[in-house]
Image (cartoon, rainbow, N blue to C red):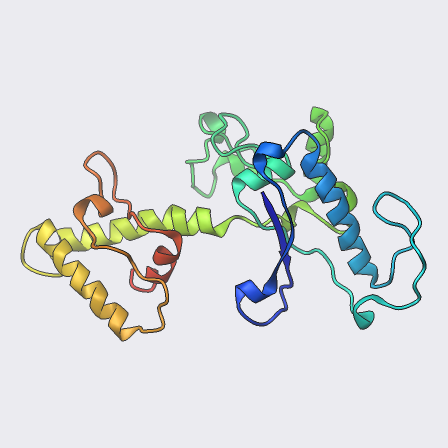
Length: 254
């Protein structure tokens, strides 16, 4: 499990803006490990918010006084937490996505029943159960569940600051379904040639190559040729088989 941080106002490439706080093998994690890590990080975030040298460390022990400001008087605040669903379940004790009841930390959506997540209509019942930070804490108190460390210790940290994981939700989620359906509909409509679906898929590969040639700044490109199986398996709805960055860069093409 890797904990990193970055400044949202920083300039440069991702690798030059992202800094490692700590890393620990999941095999070495025991109950309380993540809480101990987040206790230290929360103290660090709060020190950044003051902008001055702290008088005590994260365990309350006195530190040798220093009169100078940190970072020349600049201050910083924790304003967002990003991670995948496994990370959130581990450090916030959020419900897992495949749980039958209350599968979402933002609302009470479930995998079935009246609060089914698959009801995407404007009047879907789960919409009325969405949480804000205060109602989330009330829910935890009513259930007798512990408030996550970051919400306890990091000043200003709120539920709304936990970001949705775009890579898994979009790049490896809905984008694959949308992309697969768009391409299959085009092939069925003989958009690329007068032949059958397989012939259109073969021509589609050439169309994508030409699109890449006209967009040389696309850094991550689809690897291997598209086949019918990479767009739609025989027993399923269309879904593109590609990696996250490949899909993200193909979005304009779709």
